[in-house]
Image (cartoon, rainbow, N blue to C red):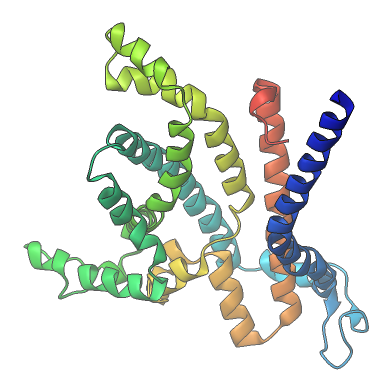
Length: 305
């Protein structure tokens, strides 16, 4: 009887596994088609691509297509902005999202919790085109901000303001999505730990730094490593739409994605665009490997792999 029961449990386990794999199938197919099958197209970066000759029939030119990334001050400025702005977004978003998640966790059982969640999550679903109109309404010469100032500021002619402006826009638009991840981790923490800390007289701030933050730190590190992998992948909609593609702001807002786009539109060189994209992917891969290695040296249990 024991053997029969064990066999039935094994059969039920296999069925559950098959069901779960079938649920994952659409995502796996998407990865295979759009992430792995397209790797063959990376060869374009090393060729003088001609559509009539195809990817593998075009002339091989080695690293010549990578030269334009380092041959002009504009490309170097775009690379610098990509790293600095995305680094600013990663740090700022992590800290602000943790702060909002902690507040949401504290009122999660309140009647207004769903309202708060919806309010924070709604901006995530607004397109960057619409967001650009919101920002213009605030920052234009006749906008809301200048209407409150005695001395108007020409925001669309002054690049110094835009790192801060873009950070505020990113926090407003993406914080709601990030809170879903961290809030889920916080809700998985044993409530008895908080009850014991309250008995000992711990404040909300002390509970966050002694219980919540240490227990969700692996999740924070995973999110950080995944964000680091995309540090060279700037959000094209953010950097192209929100500053309205103003040439006067390129000093602060031009990133590799917008620089490549303009190069592709003006020059029409597909090989150069492919080279730049491959360059971003390789650097992102190297950064993740190095960051994960550092995390593994400090605490192996918190490493991504």
